[in-house]
Image 1: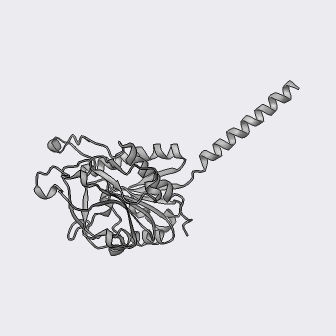
Image 2: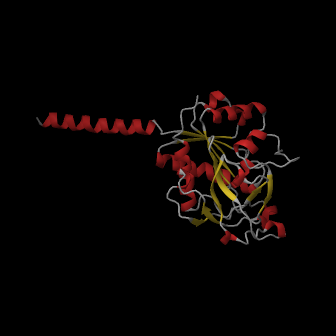
Image 3: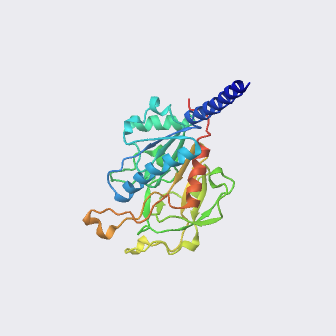
Length: 281
């Protein structure tokens, strides 16, 4: 009888262990992050930070996280393995990569882009040559201007009913960032849901030294979604660096994007919402 009891207890423990192992082996959803990390030191710093932070988040909340700097992986066969795509710093440049991404999104894929992933400027290395992405998908159009130096801003929730802003305070202080202004007024786009914007208590925002790098008024969306896609754009993703000693090549990071509990909650909300999207065809 004693042997039978020990045997049954052993079976129970084995069953529980098996269930736990299976749960670990089957993530709720899979995330793939694309990045370049070659030019701006602040963007490189953010990419390295993201590729350390997201795996920790994935372990805690039971999803998987992979990353790649090979943008040729932006193809139908590769993307079919993942429910969510992240652009950490740049965007795809080849036509076949862009076509694959557009089809992925049209078929129900999830996407989150950070900071520079929305950048486009005529006659620059990131030209305004992808109309669908910048004007239809993001809705923002090209880059217009930015604040400088990277500075914290008070952000205001514009849509408290969206899953991305769930349980966020009405206003909160974000991490230091280079804040972007866009050519298009997103308030006039019926497809865009503005989720967070810079609160007026942030002004003046930026320290210069150039006068136009300091904002004193205006409306600036920083997180938004497009109702026709499972997507979120987040303007954050530019760490503050020791620019005064950049020629010493120390590249010291002075602030970290993921060093903010409320901001992190918004990013987690976004991922969990995107990961519940319909199955990609």
